Length: 441
Image (cartoon, rainbow, N blue to C red; front, side):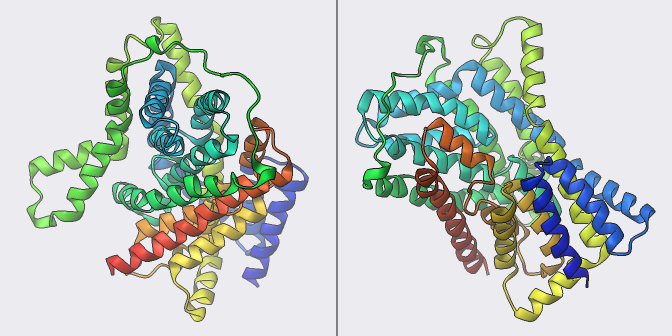
């Protein structure tokens, strides 16, 4: 009976979001309350579950997301992201332009949210397409694939950070595993897929406009400065994660504890913000009012994401406290499926149905949490869920329409390029998770 209520709740959630266009935050909150009553919980238990779910979910990631947004804004406002983009494209040359876009987007996408990275790199794509007359999608697909993978797989992005909290995964180790899986994923979904679709006549779209780049390169920070600052938090987080993985607990001394502290993702991002304020000091707004406005804009950009994550945490807690997640776990245990596959499959189903990757990740994590066994890696569960949440973006996803409208494609062209690229990313992510799980066990 509880499973039937859950299915009905998910259907109602779809109706609210797709038909009545209710925001994901409000839709998730309303469905959580309604399902709580249908599960037989009293109003006090429902309110406590919602408060607990929101607090537990946001408590560990608010600073992480805020610092991540601010760091990305500093890279953008200073011109560092543009400097990295242009320099790599010049160094790689026309023959390897896809790889230049791939690496550029991956570096820019590590600290930046998807939409911010997309908007920053878009003029670079148009500029290269205008100068070379190479098919637009040949260049755009590697860029989109890298941004999508970093957004779906790697902390400090909202989805991976939030579900890492649910699974109690180590963020540094999640980042390390995520990079290992992300590299082959972006290669197949980016240059390989971009090369394949450029062979189809209907997708050989040549950009007819002029270069979109208007900023003067002389106003940018140096390439080394930009690259070092952009990668600084990733380097610290990775070093700490590797040492934590290799050094036995009994041999951890004061020095390593300091390294682990500095390598905590939140601390690493805070240090990176301070570093960026220093290294980019001559390329940022001079007045304190402009700096304050820049900071406010960066924090404001994540407000909606935080609300969706909060509502997703409430939804998860209702499933846990009502007992329905235990029924789901018992069902899949009887079918003898891997928890990693179940996490991926549930996220993929909800993603295709609802469109939102963040909602898909949060909802599926709440369902599959009790299914995890003592031998299941929580870090790989994060990556499996993240991969599933990227499955087959189509007409109910904002990312689909952003890609379509910016590159002036029709629905069919967008499905053949963007949607299939996202599907490749999802399946490659699942394959990477299963291979890594086999190697670690």
